[in-house]
Amino acid sequence: MSEPIKTLPLVFDEPKGRGKPPRHLADFTLDERKAHLEGLGLPGFRAKQLSTHYFSRLVDDPEQMTDLPAADRAELVAGLLPDLMTPLRTLEADKGTTRKTLWKLFDGALVESVLMRYPDRVTICVSSQAGCGMACPFCATGQGGLQRNMSTAEIVEQVVAGARSLARDEVPGGPGRVSNVVFMGMGEPMANYKAVIGAVRRLTDPAPAGLGMSARGVTVSTVGLVPRMHQLATEGIPVTLALSLHAPDDELRNELVPINTRWSVAETVNAAWEYARITKRRVSIEYAMMRGINDQAWRADLLGDVLNSYGDWGWVHVNLIPLNPTPGSKWTASDPKDEREFVRRLEAKGIPTTVRDTRGSDIDGACGQLAAAE
Ligand code: SAH
View 1 (tube, rainbow, N blue to C red):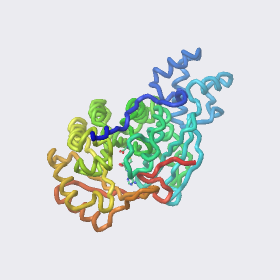
View 2: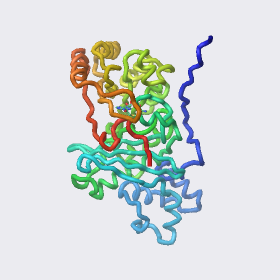
View 3: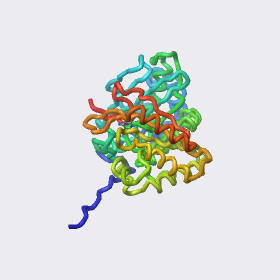
View 4: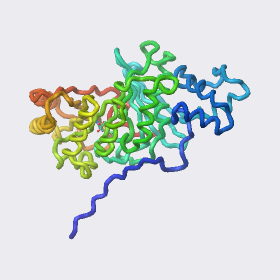
């Protein structure tokens, strides 16, 4: 008998499904916004005012846009600031400093974002796709498959909504700002490359073209779509790249991260190293610690050797994630003793290693738990 043909997750770039999300100013550069308004028969110079309301003042109520003529306001807002998504529910943990929001998009697709406030920073974890096509068996998002790609504006709006709630003092700790954005919510960012790059640009463009964040505060996480990682390195935006490795050997990684059958550990780690070399940004290797699966001491040594084979100039650090529970998963988190030994062995090989906190796990808002059910 011949071997069954391996089916690989498909990589889509265009949104599919019922129509396209409404066009919003966050989809466009400042010049494109102007042209878009003019195309609608509206004065182009209003684009800058609308942009200031959205990105600088974080206003969403047209009533407050008093610098726009009352007679044209509705039309201008419909042209560049259409409603993109509706919050269905927000769950809180850690005394309100962790907040997971469930969003309904224009076509009914559901996504989630998570805001995490720490003493020294605020991180928003955003989704880039409704669902995910990568099918990693330990991740809740991967179990439902891909519904569709999100648009640039749908991605950006999650951050702007979080920024609004901080500015309006709705998050304990006083009025605040978003300092970090991580593309670690639902979806595979590199499978929605164009929209994700657009979102990164909007987040980092100075106001009123964008939110004016530092690119250093932005992290894009990927299962390892190698050609896209190479492409990202050439964009000239120094975002942090995180690679979800989870195993240092192909045999195990083929099972944990199925796209590994397309791009091997060696190809994937090589692309991460290339990214570090070109951007001078230290890459983060994500490694979810699964009891008896990938947490053996010998795998720590192998991981250290694989990473060190690209040199020890500080190009990489490892972030261990205690496995978060997901429905129906047969795996559990590692024994803390094994986790400590794993850290010790990596550090003995000179690799900076941290263990991620499990913020949000009590509201199913931690890594790998976003499934967006109503
Ligand atoms: N698709 C991208 C972006 C998602 S980031 C990526 O995989 O990198 C979410 C991170 O959480 C990834 O590193 C993912 O592998 C990890 N993860 C998924 N399920 C998890 C779980 N149950 N426990 C801990 N981490 C998990």
